[in-house]
Structure formats: C-alpha cells, structure tokens
Image (cartoon, rainbow, N blue to C red; front, side):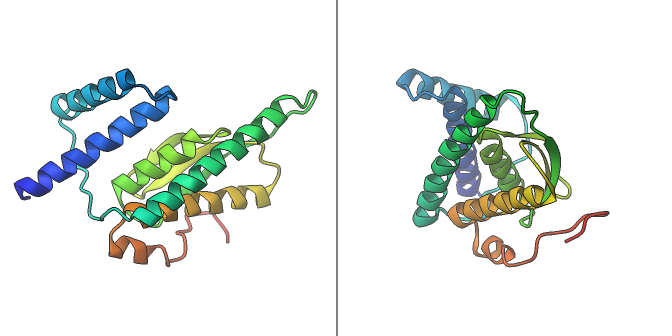
Length: 186
C-alpha cells in the first residue's frame, strides 16, 4: 500500500469517525468538533485496527441525495414514533430482521448500519462481517409485508451510500438481486 493511499484511508476513517461523533452528540459546536477530531486521532493511533480501505470516490450528487433522503427519513420516522408513543393501549409489535447486503465491503456495512440505527425506530443488534449481514430490531412491524418494506428501505439506504462513495464496481453490484439466506423466501 502506498503512503498516499494509506494516508487517504486514514483521513477518510478519521472523517467518518468525526461525523459519527457529531451525529451521536446531536449538536454541532466547535468544542464537539475539536473533541471529535481528538477522539478520532486517539482511536486511529491507539487501537490497531485493520485498515478499512476506501476503494471508491466521492460522488457529490450522490452525497446530496443521501443527505436529503436521510434527513427526510429522520423527520418522518421521528413523527411516526411520536404518534406511536401517544397511542395509549396499543402494544406495537417488533421484529429482528436479517438483511444481507449486496456490496461486500466493511465500510458499506458500517455506514449502512450507522445510517439505519440513527433513524428512530430501528437499531442494529448484530452484524456478520463475513457475509456483510445486518440484524436490525424494528418497532411497529405489523406483518410480513412491513418486514419486506423495511428490508427494501435498508437496501435503498445501502444503494444511496454506495452511489455517494462507492467505486464503479460497487455501484455495478447494486444491480444484483439481494442475497437470500437459508430459510428465507422471496
């Protein structure tokens, strides 16, 4: 690996860590930003993790589409969850949904999991790195159709992320049908 590529991968990892740090705090301030940069530097220096290579490139239009849809989903899910919270006497059903991703990339797995978890009403409970599969707890799932609708939303999120930062090869992988695991039907 060349020094420039190694530096670029570390810069991308640091940027992602800082963005996640800011999203977790939920408030933008210079203090949070500076502390996020410090935390990212410590994490990347102290913890010897295997490098997560960034094989793609930034696509500005894809980034804007992802950001716009993410904000829309965030507001919509917040309103739906608030309505659900004020429905007295109603016991919402929940489910843990297995979603095998189409693009076998640790970065795509992580970013998709983060994006899905940041939307109210869903939470990543486990991941399988070997098969790039997310296991997601979802609230207010009425039936099998709701499960499939949520799974399609995760695939759409994966596609927006790949179209925002993916390589040409990763973008081509989005055309493949989603993987089906044992015991699952389509």
